Amino acid sequence: MRSVAGTELSRTQYLQHIASDYNLMVTALAGPVVPVPTCPGWDTNELAHHMGMVYLHQAFVIEHGERPEAKEHRKHLTGSETDMELLAAGHLAITGALDPERAERKTWSWHHNDFSVDFWFRRMAHETLIHRVDAQLATGVIPEISELLALDGVDEVLDFLPLLGSWDGAPNVAFGIVSITAHTSTGQKHWTLEFTTESATVTAANQVDPNARLIISGDAIAMDLYLWGRIDSADPRITLAGDDEAGFKQLMQVAVN
Image (cartoon, rainbow, N blue to C red; front, side, top):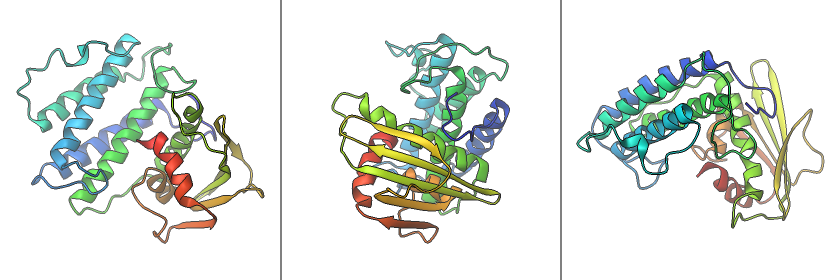
């Protein structure tokens, strides 16, 4: 898989996180149906439905190396499943597909240059993490997140940015340079983002870029949540310097929507 700053975990570690975060999500979703503030317009049933369908779709991709063109990933469903039953069916499918012994090969992905099976181990771990957080926040539980997984989540979401230059109608803007720093208990990682009218690029860095228009720093957990729009810069764990955070967040929406 592609990792800009070398933060990736092993297949087994990703699977462990998927298992634990799925269980926490199910626990949070098992109560009364309530709105999900971090996913405007959704309630907890819709969150369960979304995750179930994501799991089923990506399990098909991993098994077949291509995306379903005629809803083949749903063929074993009866249509009478509850949202929680759909979530359980999806989880069973994705955990079966994500075999740590599966040979690496080219498969479909929407990433700009990573078409590996490993891509999906990583992607499904972070998809599960973020929506587990959504479920817990909706039900009044303060999420606890692995620092190493969060650091890898920062790296992954920033690596989505080069997609800006490859999608039809992508809002490429000459925003300039943004420096991101994530602090951990053992050190820190830096990323330099550069937005032009042609593309957006992300590279690992040794320090904050002195030419940055906007500098954003925080601990790895807060930074992951910030970049995914689960917290904002009013959170005391996030520090900003420079200008036009709103413009940067608008560009990030292409990556995280």
